[in-house]
Image 1 (cartoon, rainbow, N blue to C red):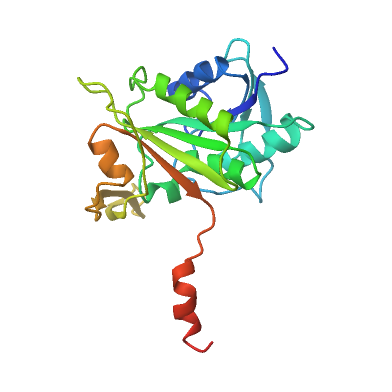
Image 2: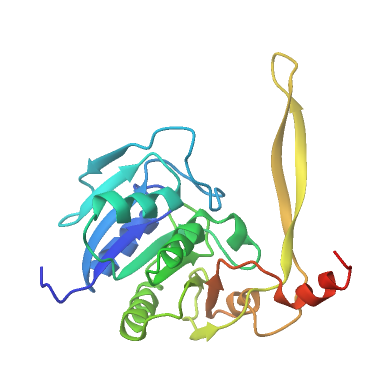
Length: 257
């Protein structure tokens, strides 16, 4: 492997055996030296959780030809932390890529997403990072139409870098009869999940719940990620971990606290 090739960490939240991560690994192999550290089981919806009350186990796996790969018992954020501090100790990472997720991570879903939390953890560590998601939940999803866009976006990030503490949230529309129209750099849509809980009883008479719900898009704009996906564009949203509501600081200060 050429010393000039970038060192790329690949991770995800669907688990190290998911079809999406295999597509991402294969694409990254065309760009740089790849190391995989990913959860040993699905971690969807984990958000930015980290493991603090249990041990974290890391095992080498032989899943990708020519690529060092490790499964991790922790969360997606754990994977990035342990990759940087232990697996790649002493080596400088040039890029963290997470995905390709089976399912959308547009709008408010970024808060719950393990895929994006891994990417944002990269940004926390000062490493350029990208989270990739396909708006198709099936395990047998077709990723063939997104490979070239994964490569284009990745190469642009490596060439230009990213602003400090920023990760890109990239969502792809599912494969359709017509080709993707292009890439839109946009904002996160204003939307929310309206939860519903299916209440049931187990054989012992104890109550349990299945959480379901519907995605409610409250945003009528044409410059957001949901609009882009609905109109067959790749949506790219620069994302940060600073959740401060700067516009509200003066309002709260007027309370006289």
